[in-house]
Image (cartoon, rainbow, N blue to C red; front, side):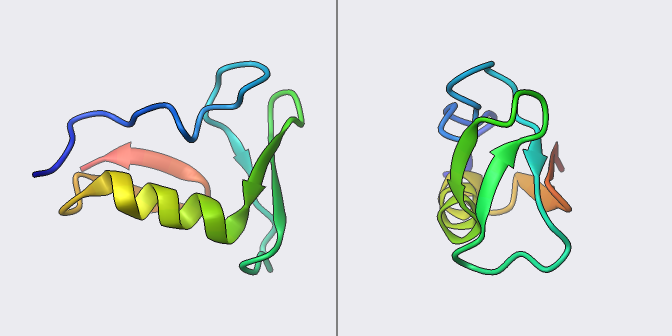
Length: 70
């Protein structure tokens, strides 16, 4: 079953926003930081896997660090 909302695992633990600073050439092990406060969020691979797990059957889309509900 798809979710209608995210469960806050992608939120920045420091400032609470979901704004990812993702380099153009990000790989699985690239560290990703919050673009608001620069807090560490995890590796690009970890964040993508968590997003895919939460998005269920495609309720959300991740495009260049922007999460949008479809």
